[in-house]
Length: 64
Image 1 (cartoon, rainbow, N blue to C red):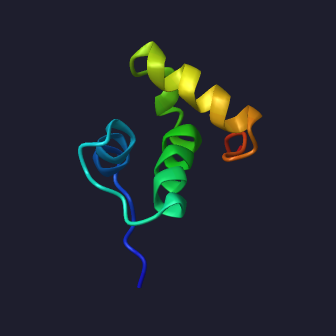
Image 2: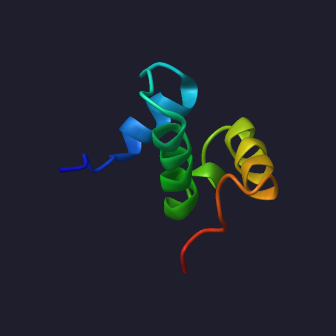
């Protein structure tokens, strides 16, 4: 059973505080932040990184 990410879990993974087992988990954390809109409410680095990941095809635009 896959663990459901909380907002805090996703932030800690994105910041590198919580180690990630694989790239899918890392990008999954970023996708969570994007889907929740948190990348726009946190420090500017989150928004810029999310934009870069979306442009690179590693994440997608938020679910609407």
